[in-house]
Structure formats: structure tokens, C-alpha cells
Length: 159
Image 1: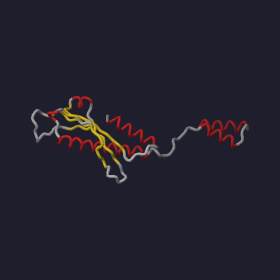
Image 2: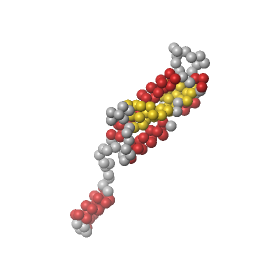
Image 3: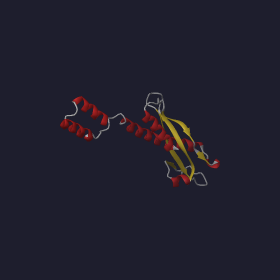
Image 4: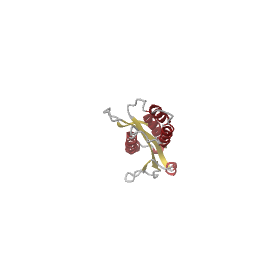
């Protein structure tokens, strides 16, 4: 689910024509099965972005999505959605708070990576191989069949 959310966000950013008030980033969190007796000295282990094996062995898991914005709107990692699930006998509000905090830190890293990659979207235009156009221009000059304006127009069309 986290990958779908992040891919959708990147697609909207890439479109460039969709007005957005922030960027939504998501991560998955899993909790390894806790011991039968709760021990405050050894809280359950929370895993950020668990593997398939870790997710299948988890006693609770879910995806957390956060909104990030840099426009001063106060959306510096605001939780907008989660599907955290745990069995009824192991559901713990404190654990959900800890899982959310871990997820926020992971989502922030994703957001920073997205910012870095988007920064280069408006970079210099790609370099085209214009060797073919130059070859055509050279042939036309040798043949004398076109004036300079026609050669320039042909070169632009071929690129």
C-alpha cells in the first residue's frame, strides 16, 4: 500500500499541472509478535518497512500516510491515513503512538528523497544526439540543394 501511495504522489508531482497543497508519503510498519506476558522492560519490536517474512510473522502491521508541506501551513508530517491492525487482545494505544512516530520518521526520509529527485525535474533539457542532423546539413551543403534557412528548419524538425 505504501508503494502505491508513494508512486501516486510521484506521478502527480511529475504531471506538474495538478495543484497540490502538500506531498503525501507513506511507509509500512510491522510489530513482531509480542511475548504472551507484557513486559514493560522489553516492549514489542516495531519494524519500519518490514520484509514479506517479517510482515507475515508480525502481530500487528499497517501503512501510515503523512502529508508534508513547506508553505508554513503546519503540515510538517501530519498523519492523514492509516490502516494499522492488531489482534483485539494485543491492541495497545501506546503501541499505535510509537508505530506512528516511527512511521513519521520513515515517511520524512521518503519526502526528503522525493524533494531531491523533483529538484532535478526542471533541470537542463536532455542532450539529443544530433549527429544525423549534422550529417544531413553536410550533405545538403555539398549538394547545394537548399538554402541555410531550409537546412536549419530541417535540422530542427529532425531533432
